[in-house]
Image 1: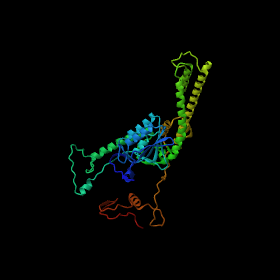
Image 2: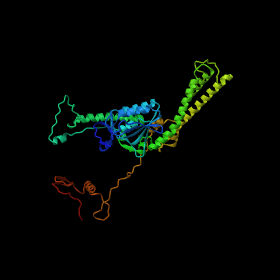
Image 3: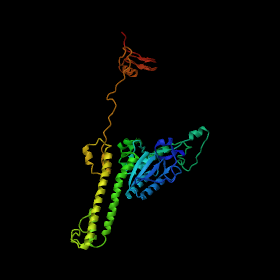
Image 4: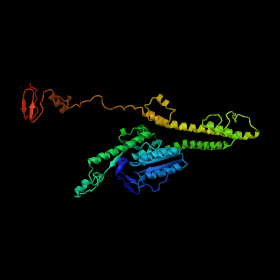
Length: 449
């Protein structure tokens, strides 16, 4: 296995420690993994914008994600272990993944399989949920610019590099040229502008103001407490929770679709059974129970009207099908409500400072609404360990052993302010009664005896 050092320059959204690490080359033609009915898209190592010989790239991630979208799995997990990488392209890709997952009706979850820092955390923000293990790290939300300057080394070797340019700033960024104040100021402005885009993404997806975090990193429960993650779980625990809830939901959803399709087929036509099926579908869609527009308004409900013997089997089948759809629809809503309650409880557990009455009042809201409300409630300040008063350390007194005494510098300053001692100087020393020229030592005004 070959290991590579990360030495990329330019505008980066990367954990600075990446420059001191070694990374294995990305597996060529990496494929997604399917476990427990969940599609897993791995994002690993440093990130670059376009396809690269050894780094993972935004192009490759987009392609693997497209394969996941086309699959049958309802849940997609981004399993991330990356320090980040190129700033260019990562914010756009994050929003793209989020929008495409929603459009496909897929639930997107980000799992931090080690670290998801900087640009990698931007991609994690595509998930509606971010799960971190106890030792997983997230954060480093910010942008940096790496610009090498080898001009001093070249000068020490007697090498002089001359740039002939068509503009005074054309050679900016060249490692053979020292960075000017103008180049530094412009680079800082670019870094700040890109960082603002990063902060906007985190605010939009996580409802967290990332600027005050100062690009710090957080792990496990601490990441949850600052809002950068939603829960602390191992990967197996995440898959088990998804398989349990999703498996049952998928089964019910599949049965519901099949039953509704059958009811839709039964609704085709102009006979009594078709009209009965259409009314059942209308009721299930929470529409009015009145007859549809293509039926006479004064026609009685066919489900309540007597029918001939030849119509009874069809009527019974339609009624049974409608009842089945109603039951499955109710079950699916119950599953979704249970799942939402679990996610809501996991998030609220990170804020034990909230009053029980407030927590109870949030029970009927979605997780997104709960996060928005909780974000407006300031966390209580952590207790300070600083002492209420400043204690001056005692020193050994010269006269009486163990006698507390101010430190020498403070004692001298106090004596000078009280007029008991002058300041040592080789210049003119002014006292209350005389001028002393070139006094070499402090003059004590304390009379003996």
